[in-house]
Image (cartoon, rainbow, N blue to C red; front, side, top):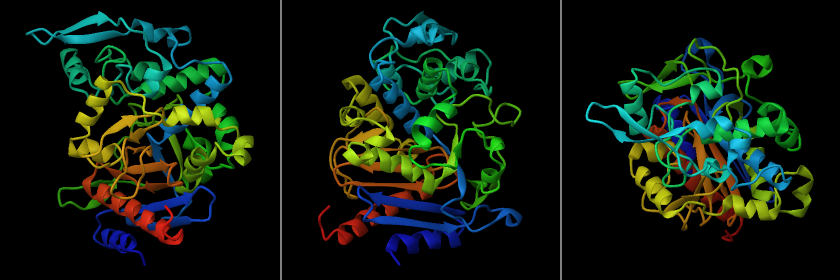
Length: 410
C-alpha cells in the first residue's frame, strides 16, 4: 500500500473525512491509478462504500468544461476572445464599477470604461466577483441590506456591480457562468445540451448532468455532503448548496461555473482529453486543435491581475480552496485554471493547469509530464485544511508512482 493510501485510510478511520475518490492517468494510458476510500455519508442509514462511480456535486470543476465549450466556438468562428461580449449578453454592458464608498458607506459607482471580453471572463479578470467573498461586494450588500442572491436564474443571482475595471485585477466570481450563458445564446442550446453533444458523448461520458432530478439513477448513487464540526470531525449536513435556489430546490439554469454532477471516473475523461487532444488520434473527439490548446494553457494575466491572484493565494484557506498550490510558487491563469510558472516540489511541471470545486475537489493537467488526476470529495467548508493535506499527499504520491512506473523518465 502506498504511503498516501495509508494516510487516507487513517483519515477515514479518524473521521477526518467520510471518504474520497482518487483517479489519475498518463497520456497514453500506460499508467493509471483509481481508488476509492471510505463511505458516501456520515449518516449511518445512508452510508455505502464510496466507489469510482459515486456521483458528486463537482461545483467549480464545471468551469473547465464551460471554458472548453467557449474555445470550441472560437475555433468555429462563432466567438472571439477579444471582442466585447455585449452583442450576445447586453446585460453586462450596463454593469457599473464600485469605485469606493462614502463616509456613510454608500457605494460610489461608475459605468465601466473598458469592455468585458471572453478572454477577461475566462481569466476572472472581468471585474465580476462572487458577492459573498469579495470585500467590495460584501460592503455593497451591507449598504443595500441584502444577502447574496440565491435565485435559480443566472442573471438574477449574479447582479452585483463590478469590483474593478475589466482587465485591471483578478477576482474569483461568476465570469464562467456568463461564459456559459454566451455559449447558450450563440448556439441556441442549453449548456447541458451543448456539452452532451460536443464534450460528453464524444468522450464516452454518460453520467454527467446539471439536473440530478432528470437522472434518478445518478441521484441514487450520489454522496451526501459532510461538514467539519467543532470537534474537528466531519458530520452529515443537509446545508443548502449553491446548486439550490433560495427554497432549496434545484436551480433552473445551467450554471456553467458550478452546476455539474458526475463521478470521478467520468470527470477523468475530461481532463485526460485535455491532456491528449493535440494528438492526431484524438482529433475525432473534436475537443480543441493544438493551436487552441496552446492558447488555453498559455499564461494570460497582465501584471495587475497576476499580482492580485498571487496575493490572494497567500491566504491559507483561499489557497487550499483554489488548488492547494505552494505559496512560494508564482502562478498565472490560463483559459481554464491556474497555471504554474515553474516546476513544483511535488512533481508537477511548469505549465501545469490546476483547479477544483467547492466541496474540496482538485484536478490537474500536466502536459510536460504527461499526467493528469483528480482528488474528489464532498466536504465543507471549501479550503478545508485536512482535505488539502490529503490531496497534496495524493498528488505527490502519484508522481512518485508514475516516475517509478516509467523508470524515472518523468
